[in-house]
Length: 240
Length: 266
Image (cartoon, rainbow over all chains, first blue to last red; front, side, top):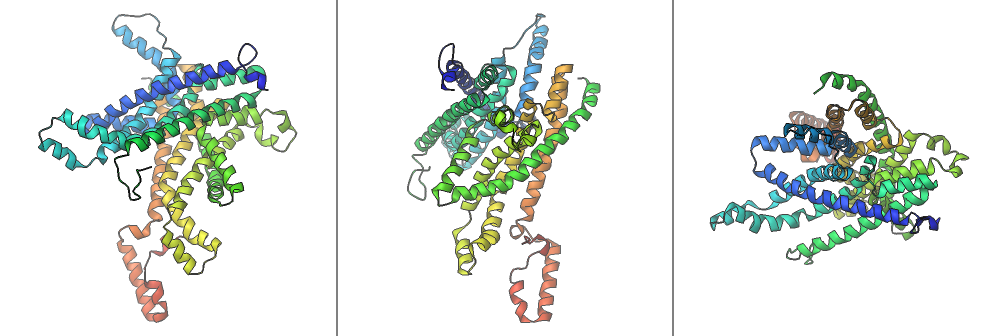
């Protein structure tokens, strides 16, 4: 049993770890993409016109209300032809195949972005309006108000929500295995099939996921404590 | 946009929707009560009870649902040591494997939600119950649990929606629920956008119904927080009139008139 998880030709340990590396890479890129989408989406929901707000409402409602797997299938089967259609407008008619890695990052990133939009929107709206008025009163420009007053507080207020989204994103990457991308879930499926040892490999995958989620949870807790150090709570201790 | 194809795909996808609803309803129904049990185990002062409950919640919240499903389906569903036992009747069916995985998963999340609700019950209410001389079981049934459930309801609504979305994973173990049907139609017709719109709308409709139902339940369970309607007033007025006829011993009953239909049933 143990020799199956060792390194080298006999064991699957190196394949599993490489899969875990791929999982982390997809998750990090998708999460970063989601944060960019979320920031822009929140700005649009709070300050945009009614059309933009309508479009963003549809985006967040649909993506949060539809299974992740369905979104992944939509991109997996639809992205290549969509890209080819766009390319044909520019005169290129050859076959274009979008890499599964890109599809994975885009799909999980769009899902993560929908949740991030709501988290950032909540954080933006939690900042008292008086502070914005005060900023205007001392003659700050819109950009100055954003990066001096809103952004620093928004990050602190959004951090607990962002921690949850990271956990979701990390676990959602497992669904990318249906596209055949060699991440942790796919690797353990291949290994389990080849060796007929499902328990060994799925439990090993579960253990690797647990390490990742636990480690990142601790990191987020530390970050929350760090960014809340200026906030007083009833107990006199920094907010947990 | 191919509308004819969209029309043709509605029936098979609705057939899948039935299975989706069955998957979710079964696992939510079992997971709710298992979740209450798990929450109580987690809050137990006996470490022999609370530590295993903690480990359970830690495992199921920290790993993807897909891993859990594969452990049940490819692990227990194919294992030789299961084939000779009574569990085989259940575990040979992909549908029941999916139900088991979803139930185990929702039990972990539900227990955390209910634990939060129990911890949020104001201490004064527990003290009041003790002062009235309630036994622990009576206090749990009449005070702790109703208040905790009410507190936990909004979060529990979200958990039901997560389960509706999570049930899509059953398609990876050959259960033809809604996403499974959608995927098979997409891969034979290569019309991902059309099928996504059909299946996506049905998922949104299901989740809309769930959200509405939870909000109604919240409303029903919070009679003291909402403005009284005319019907409530009339009923309260009638109660007072009756009480006046019956004499003063009924005065306690009318101290806090409540619409009787909304009173939690014992």
